[in-house]
Image (cartoon, rainbow, N blue to C red):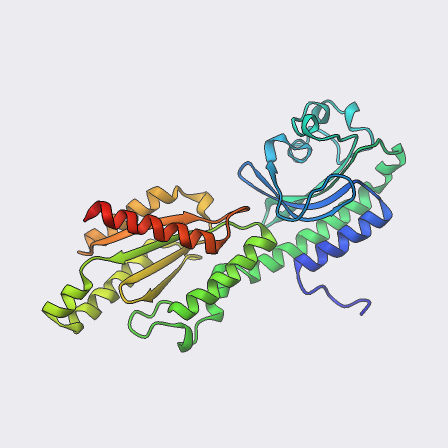
Length: 309
């Protein structure tokens, strides 16, 4: 229905790209995400370059990285006339004769870009679209920021606060809640290019504790593990008991820390609490789904268990 709000940033981006491709035809229009030196294509309207959603490039090679730094204009009908663009490595990899690019921001930080390239030079009149395309980029940034706030892990966890998704013994998420959280986080990975780090901790000797000291002691041990992991986490991060003696942590900003250092810290804190556990981690990203990360972290955790046996 005309005038109806877009249900998501993804839907708004798709509509904006379709509008721009119709009114300002280019070989490729994109909405992208930058993460470190990864430049991720979230959505693409392609006519010339065979680029699809999910493709990954180097941010430092791109025209957009130079535009964001203010080294070159938002619109370049003849990009070869702009030294910063003419020298960009991506121009040596694929033919680019014209360029349009505007930053997308969320919470005051660069998220990615709304951008376009073409294999042929464009008329100089293209620069007259600067205000309109810039306005569209600001509007997408507004929708993006609202959408991302609503879909942060802490917000998603609140949706799983009912008893059906909580482990009664430890009060962290149960397996059902973890699986739902992972599905929501995977949607965020695809939609926003977000990465996550999955950490698995598998307790040593729980069965022996239950057999020799009783299940009440074992239950207290499980509660201590949960409290230790929650204390080691930041506010957006989520802890779950997957079942038995296995716990999981989902870190929402692995780029802000060194996962291997975090795992060492977790192991030290568990040891300080009198807990021995095998620990592993893996990170999702542009080309690695959370399901793939879970398979990888299981392998690393079991390898850690073998080396410590």
